[in-house]
Image 1: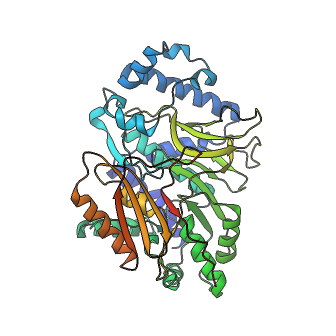
Image 2: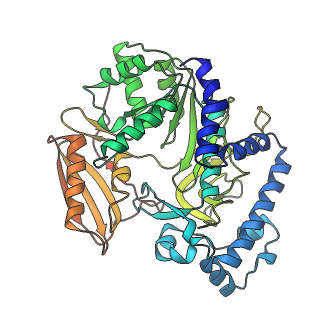
Image 3: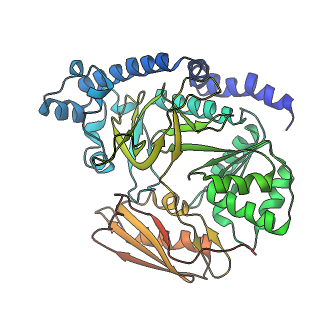
Length: 456
């Protein structure tokens, strides 16, 4: 896609669609966030604090869960005079949200919420609400972060991503095709990737000739390894953005060797979308501190100079169902340096958690671990799950079911797994009362106990 379409899309088509047709304020917020990134660190901190105080005042007035909790603890918003005071507020967990979903909704906004479900990368799918403003702002922050890596609105982009599960209607498929064509993007379903069809994925990328590739890290690395092993060369994109898993340095080198362009790391989760991303300097991930408050909660016994901790996030703009000091199950390491790019946004040195194991089959299929949270997130009554592979021809799916789980849900799970894995692997489903956590307090959703695969 030439530069003329990118300019047309950015200056005319997208504003008409987003601002005119959909009545969203995404572009206005995008303009603000692009300006904010160049503020000095102390200015961003002041802006963040102003927005945090406004959110806490709103929560005390409008959100029953926080009003009751803070009242019982003898806390009022005027008592929170610093980030140290704020850090003494109680944490919010997925269990808290599932148990108090209605009480977490703002009284004046509860009828105006949209809803999403998490992919359950910690093994516990969760439904949450969000306001229109929050959604528009999240999209704007995503565009800003992707722009740092050279991904701009209207640039020809290929997504090596998770495909739709279930049976989309023809109208839904038509709308998807129309939407993707307008946005100059194509989606390849990474859930269908096998060692036997790598050439087909390479051919598709070569034929589409994208300027940008956005991809799950696991499938992208496997394709890159295959390309290196076979000597395959394809159209060289200008940039690659890794998502859904941490991009480790050894993986970055493999991707860049295969595709011949820089690869960028991002960090996000479904509850907030983009949390942090690398800029052109790639010396850490800039935290979107003008949009979120991100803390790293250190273990009690950790040395004073420890920079790693559990990720705790507050969304400053989801007034409809606010998440204040939400523990998302990840760990990360902070950076104390100031980025040479000149942006005042703080840095994370790396993302330490959230790496899902891939599942393999006798016929060479390698299914990214993200498939299972993606497929299982909308199963009613499924409270927790874990997939373990101990044999090449067998998968064990352990499930903690609640009152809403039905026999049809089990049929759906078996059908969707068969669609991507075929009959070469046996899915053994069992119901359990609980699933143990790892020593770090997380639940590994997909666990492969097979020896590592090597590329011939």
